[in-house]
Image (cartoon, rainbow over all chains, first blue to last red; front, side):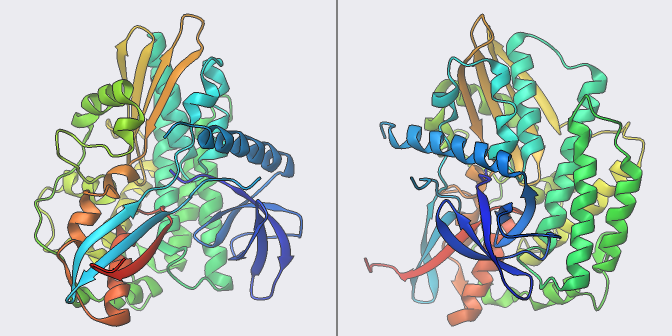
Length: 78
Length: 362
C-alpha cells in the first residue's frame, strides 16, 4: 500500500535532478525517468524517483481527496 | 494543511553485542476509506483507487471490482476475467521490472532510457484493465520489455556476465549478516477464505496486524518461488530473492507472449460472504492483496476493508522480523548495508527507513 501523493516540480537541477514540493515540503529527487519535465508539472514519486507525470487537474483532485482522508483519519478515535 | 500520512515503513534495529536483539516496525498510515465512502455508491470508489495507490492500481481495481461483483451475487464473464488477469500479470511484471533497477543502480542516460522504455511498455500492457479500451498490443510491448532488459543485462532468468545487475549481485555480502534458522511459512490462495472472512468481520483490528491463528506467513515473489518449486535454494538471502525476481520477470514475459490460455488460476479470486458481502484476492507484485466489501440494497457502500501484502511481510512478528531477530551482523557500514539489502529484498515496492539503536538505550 503506497499512497500516490502528487508532487509539484519547483526547480529543475543539473544531472536530471529536481526539487519538488509535496504538500509544501521540499524534496530533491531524480527525474531521469521522465522526459520533457517543466517547473509546475506534477509527478508521482517513488523511492526518490519521479515515476510518472500527471495532469495538474488530476493532481489537484488527488490532493483534495488525500486532505479529506487525512482529516477523517485525524478525527478518528484511536 | 499538511497531509498526515506516513508513506514509508520505519524500521528500528536494536543491537546487542554484534547481534540483532529486536526489530521494531512502525507501519504506514492507512487511509480511512470506509469512513469517507460509507453511504456512497459502490461505483464511486473505483476511480479513486488508482489515484490513491499508484504502484498497484490495477490490482486494487481488480480486487475491488471482483469483491463488489461477489457482494452483488454476480460473476465476471470469462472474457472479462481473462482481461483482468492479463492486466494484473502485466502490472506485476512492470512493478518487478522497476524494482530491479530503480533505487538500486545508477541510471545514466542510456540505462534511464531503457527503464523508461520498459515502463512505457508496461503501461501499454496494463491498459488491458480498461474493458472498454482497445485490445492490448501485448506481444509488441513484451518484445519492447525484453529488448530493454537485454540492454540492461538480463536475458532469460539470469543476469548477463559483466552486466550491472551481475555486479550488483556479486557485491551482495552474504557473510555480513547471518540470519537465524526459522521455519518458513508462506501465504497461498488456500488461505484466502480465512483471511477475507476475518477481514470482513474484524476490519482494521485484523488488517493492521494480521495473523492466521498465530501464523504470519510470507507473501510475494519468494513465496511464489517456493510455491512453484518447493525445494528451496540453499539460502533465502537478498541474492536468492533478487534472482527469484529476475526468474519471475522471465516467466511473466513468457506468459504474456503466449496465448494466455494457460493462465495463473490464483491471480484473481472472488468470494461471496453472504447477503451483500463479497471479497476478492489478487496476486500482485508484492504478494496477495485482499479486499472485502459490504453493500446495502441500494448498492451503496456499508463497509470497505483491504489488506495489503506488506502487512504480512513487515508485520512486527512477521517474516522480515524473524529473519533479522537474532541475526549476527558485521560491524559498521558493512552490517548495515546487509540489513538494508535484506529488507529491500522482501518487497519490490515499499519505501522504508532504517535506524539502529543499542538495545536498552532509550
